[in-house]
Image 1 (cartoon, rainbow, N blue to C red):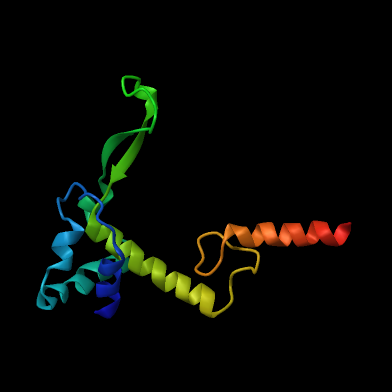
Image 2: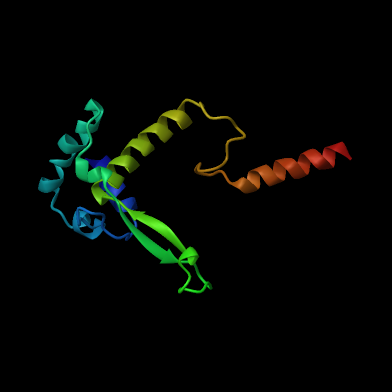
Length: 133
């Protein structure tokens, strides 16, 4: 249950997907309602995903500083189910935990890792160049 609560707490205030469920709604559910979510989420282990979780509403977002009358100055953003994103976050957290705890990622893999930065690569490159001089 704590895994689910943490996943919901990590969410931002993004818009609802086609199912109309907002994170704000999930945050205010009583714990008695949250107990049904693991059963729903465990369906994914069978390879089945709810059809509504496969849908997205695409919203055009104008690029900053560009002419809004030109359609090429928009970027598409897909709004997907907050419930599905919560499940995806839980699965991702589990995978990251396994990869990190078992040292399955290379030391030079810095992107998208906690306590790592692309600046780490710049420091390595700078050190490498300095040693070659």
